Length: 250
Length: 339
Image (cartoon, rainbow over all chains, first blue to last red):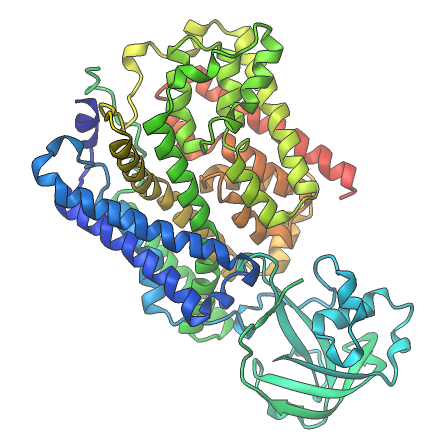
C-alpha cells in the first residue's frame, strides 16, 4: 500500500492516540467557536455581520469530530482505513489557537494595540445613512467623515457632540488634551485600525491612557498639536465600561 | 506503485526542533516588544492573541468548507469525466483550463493530485498548467471569501483578471515550448496522494469517507493557515505602522515584498484574503492583488507538491514565470491607480 508506506517517513504518533487527539481538537474547536457566539466575545474578533460564518464553522467542527469518533470506534474491525499521516507536530500547531484561547483571556484591541500613531482620517466608504445622523447620534467615525468633507474646520463651531471612546495621548499633545479613540473593523481584527477625534478638557490628565470615557461638549476649531482642527471642548467627562461592541464598523 | 525509495512530498520543516525554534523566536520577539515599549508582557501577548484569533476565527470556516469540497471530490468525482469536454483549439482549451476550477473547486493543496490524475488521462500540458495555476482562485469558495474581505472592487476584479491572464500565459508558454515528456516526471516516479483508498461502493460510506478526508485536509492545511496567521499577527503586533508604510508604499517594492511574503506564508487560497486584510491599511492595492493572485499559484507547500509531478526545470519555470508576471501586473496596476 503506497499510502501506508509513505506515512512512515516521519515520527507519527501511534494511530489510535493521534485519532483521539484529532477528535479532541476538532471537538474543542467546535466548543470554542460555539462559546464565542454564546458569550458575545465574538465581537472582539470579527465583524458581527459574519457571525453566521462562525455558526457554520461550529457545526462543521462538531460534525467532523463525530465522524472521526465514529471511525475511531469502528476501526477495531477495519484496519485498512487508518490515517497515520498526522504527526504530533501538526497536532500541536493545529491545537495552538485552542491553547492560546484557553491561556490568554479574551479581550478587545485597546490602547496597547496602537502601534505607531492614530489616524484622523475616516476609514472605508461612508454610507448615506452615516451622514443623515443628527449631531448627537454621531460616533467618532461619523464625525471624522463630517470633518473630511467639510470646507473648513470652523464650520462645526458651536455644534454639540456626545461620543464615547478611549483616551489616547502623545507627548506632543497639550496637557489638557487627548484623542478620544476607537478601533474600526471592516472584516476582522486583522484590518482593525485606530481612529480618533481631538478633545480638550481641563482636568482630563487624571484619566489614564486607555480609559473609556463618554465625552459631551461643543466643537470649535482650534490648534491641536500643531494642526488647526475641529476640537471637541468637553463640558463633561464620564468614565464608562468598555462597550459590548468595542469597534466601529465602517 | 512501489515508490518507497522516493522521498516524501511532505514538507519536513515541521519537525519538533523547528517548532521549538519558532516558539523561542515568538517568546523572544514579544518579550523584546514588551521591554522596548514598556507595555506589560501579558498585554503584548493579549494583543497578539486577539489579532491571531481574529484571523483564525474568520478564516477557519472557509478552510472547513474547502476541506469538505476536497473530500467530496475525492469520494464522488471521477477525474476523466471533466476534461472530456475540452475544446480542440489549444488557446481555447487553455483558457478553459484556467476556468476548470469552477467545476473542480479545489484549493492549491488539492489541485496538484487532481492535475496529476488529469495528466495521466492525457490532458494537454497547457490546459493542465492553466488549471494548476488558476484553479486555486477560480472557485466559488475563494470568490466568496475574497468578496467578504474586500467587497466588489479593484482587489476582487484585479485578482480575477490577473489570475486568468497569468494562468493562461504560463500554460501556453510551457505547453508550446516543452514536450510533454520534458515536462512531466515518468509515471512511476510520481507520488500518489496520501488519500488513495479503494473507493467504497455505497453512497453512505462514500460520504463518511469524504468527511474523514475533510478532517485530514483540515489538519494538513490548517497548520499552514495557523503558522501564516501567527506570523501576520506577530508582524502587526511588533512592527510599527510607519515601517510597514515605508515598505508598503513603493509601487514596485511593495509588490515584491508581498509576493515573497505570499510564497513564504503558504496560506490556503480560501483564506488568504483575510490575511491580506492585515496589509490593506499600509500597502498599495497592486501589492495586495499580487499577494492574492500569486500566493495561490505558487508557495512553499505547492513547490514541494509540484516536484512530485513535474521535472525540476519545469518546477523552476512554474515558480519564476508566475512570479515575474504577477509582479508586472501588480506594478502596472499600481501605476494605473496612481501610487
